[in-house]
Image (tube, rainbow, N blue to C red; front, side, top):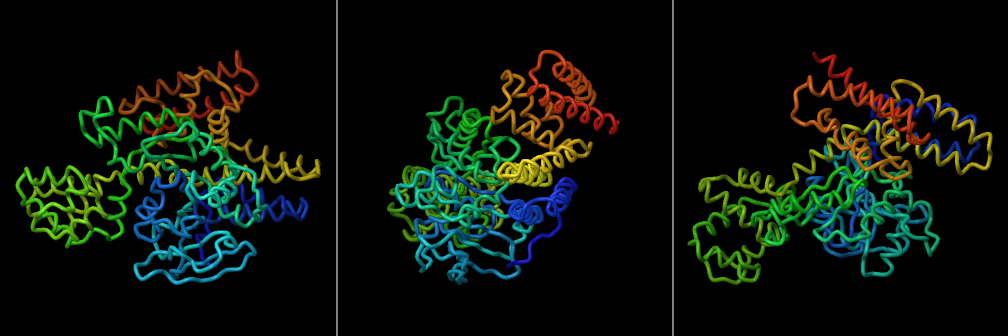
Length: 510
């Protein structure tokens, strides 16, 4: 077992940990064991599961986020299994079997997990990859099998792992727990969002810490943005990236309120530039291609076949490798960068390509939605688990004891963030019905930690923000007392306090 971050994410996680520790001597052995597992997860890094349909480019994106080409991207045994990437003092791969046994495997020569494990996959629960990687010190990334696989066995295993369907084989709890520890989800879509993506996302997150997806704990990315035909997207002006941004905005409406946002990304370019795949030899080859006359270049860039087969001084093998690393869109962007700056270094060119990939935007959103709220997300997920443990108990006294302890915790002023997260989840899931305009207003609190964005007044002066926060605080207090249903009133009181705290915060800055 690797040494992981043992300190808690913050004061809310500490409060929930104290609650669990205090309850353990007062409950049954089974519930106490469950509380022990909650305590373990509270002290672990935030766990983000990457989900999506098969061939959506999940593993490529995982590699880009980690900064190392470690997750296999070609179809193989490993892509049919859940793989957890976490921090370790020594790089190693462990295959965890359904009976609890573990087998250590070496990495491939290129540093990746072997695509074929050399064991009976049907007996494997999941794979653990420990990496001496700074990114993973406070973030565990869980790569999952693709939903919608054509392989019937993989479909059954994936759906069983994600709780999307009854488990026909009675899969053991170890397998389900491999996914269930996740507290947040990064959902990967391509340009064709299917009607059942909402259900797939809901089913996936139902297995991750027993919480529905919402703007607090889920974001989505539109991967393979370079494959979008810009001419088919109105308002793009023929620009591929602009088309991807517009399409991502439309997909955000489709997946609302399950996710905080949908951001475009080109996973292949991001992976190549972040994992060392793009080399100085590649930069040299691109400079030579930039010297070709414009007509020849444009002809070659019409299709991958033409680019690889056209007669020119750059060897066919070199061009094929560029296609594998960047595809046509990345190659075109690189040539534009060389045209603008003929003496550009390989490092600067890599940076230009990374900027074009959209990965920085995804990382910024991950930081805003997940990392900056890790304390609240982990505490809320832990409370959801504690509530589920109490519900599963056959002892009504035990259930009441746990319920009372949670209510005492939530009554404390410092627990307001937990109340807000709870309210967001209730509204996002539809458990508390509200008019659409009020739903939008409530969910803004989950879309960003930035106060101006929470108020829907980005870029406005502080005085205007203060006045608006105070006005809305008063409105929600009135709504809670007059006209709201009991469930709506509970949410309204939380939203009122959220606005009031924002007003106090802004006032304190003046």
